[in-house]
Image (cartoon, rainbow, N blue to C red; front, side, top):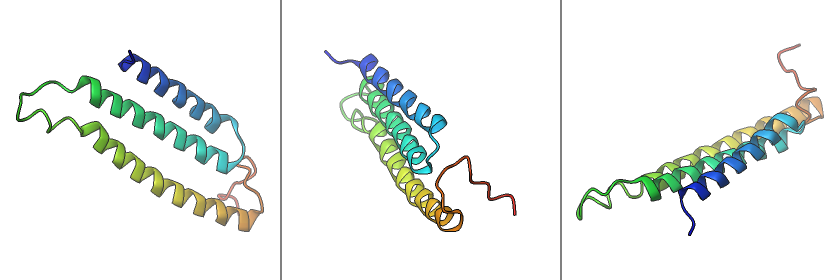
Length: 111
């Protein structure tokens, strides 16, 4: 039987993979994909906690808090989509001006 521990372990593994990708890769596109993996790991944890930790409130009120994790996950997905759109726009701008997507070579604060 799959329980909360299994989902949290999967979430932790995905988050660790995303963190490794965000910290070790040099391509800005790969860094954005790694951030998306970390956000999906958070979504898995939110939905798992919503499924397994919601306290029973009674017959009428049981459905009111049952979908709170899913609702938070929808908000996270929305923020992730906005982050991906803005991030890709920034990457395209940097590529057009500097002709590279290597995050170690980009320093826009210098003139």
